[in-house]
Image (cartoon, rainbow, N blue to C red; front, side, top):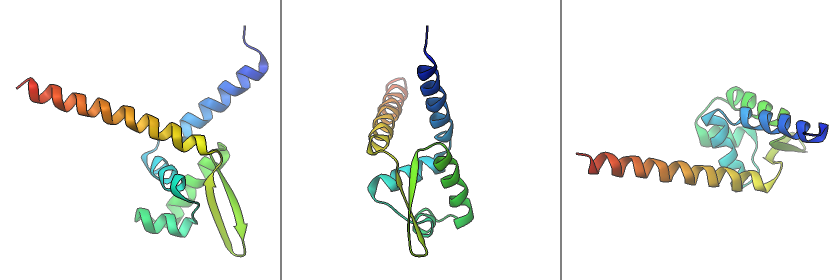
Length: 110
């Protein structure tokens, strides 16, 4: 039987995973894994509208994936925990391996 604390962690994990179901958010996480950045810098790097990036940042902030730091008129975003970047890199590695296997299977099946 699971305790209330364990159930709370499952809910948090579910919210976290739901927040990562968007490729733009995954790209933002990748960029924030390199360094903290403002919404303006993120929008420029990603070639997206600032309003669009802000919406994605809000989703990740609510899910406790990122945090913000205010300095003057600027708001800097960073990962709430460095392990988030490690976890995303691990999952990307798994997906890359699967893609390579599929390509190799397709090539050898011809």
